[in-house]
Image (tube, rainbow, N blue to C red):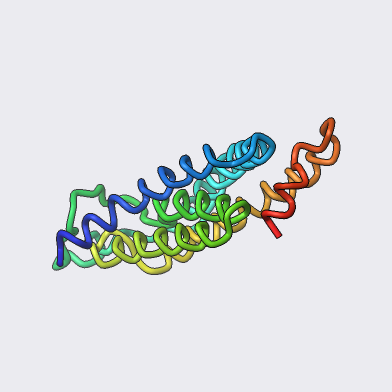
Length: 168
């Protein structure tokens, strides 16, 4: 059981971006540009929000608070708020969800399962995971708003008609 938790906690946050890369390769050119631009914006925003959240709230890791807990894998005893892994994986999942809804939901579920595994592994508290998902949602929403603002001003509107139908 411990091995499964460690694999879920450490592999799922890496698997989500790998699947997203495959999705990106399968998109039409216009959607690749849109997803790529939104990814850059969202990742910058999510990294900034992670820093702000960590500065505003300190949440020592479970094993640092309770010495009777041993983490399932080596981890520094720093501030665990918010979960960087969950925030980044959820950001990627929300981005994919904008282009491939069902697959995005699956990736978001994988991100949350990975976060839950990190709670079980004693390296995060539940609030760290929830904050990571919320921060990701905010970052992707900001990227979507920014892209909607930029997209109509681009020559030929990069989001083609096929993409619009597919997203609906």
